Length: 182
Image 1 (cartoon, rainbow, N blue to C red):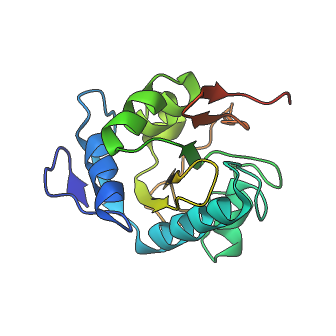
Image 2: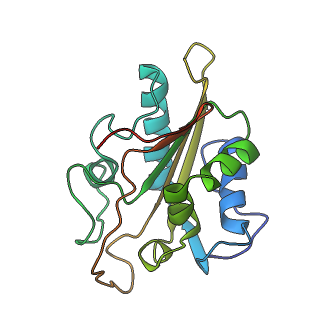
Image 3: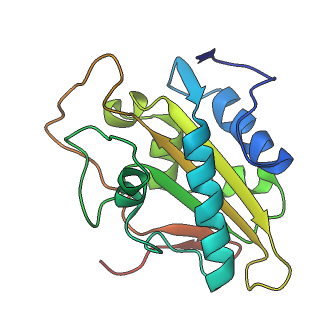
């Protein structure tokens, strides 16, 4: 585990992804006392970023929901996490050239900020992170960012929550936050 903050925290498929990881981990408002880089989450994030670039979309539902994508990869989420159409684990962005710019945009989004900074107890217990960044000039957004922060059910203590937040379908693009009708 990395005790926060850490300027040497390395977690991501690229230098840009690692810079974003450090921005998240070292943010002065980060509520989590520790975070662990999960190589499986990095690999899943990289595949998701590649899928988005290939489709030219920034979408939570390419290849299933965010929660189901992690489960399908063999990770065990806590039983109180949502099922088929749920998202308690994924943040996406498209069209931001640098980690600093995408971090600013993500912090401007209420649901992304709550998740990435662990602002509510449900998210604060999530201590596993994986980030990917893909750049492809032949695609509509060019830059694709995928962030997974989650708790795995094998972690020490499970806390049932009376209310489980769902980040929904919102994404952040260079044109601002997009929150589709639900």
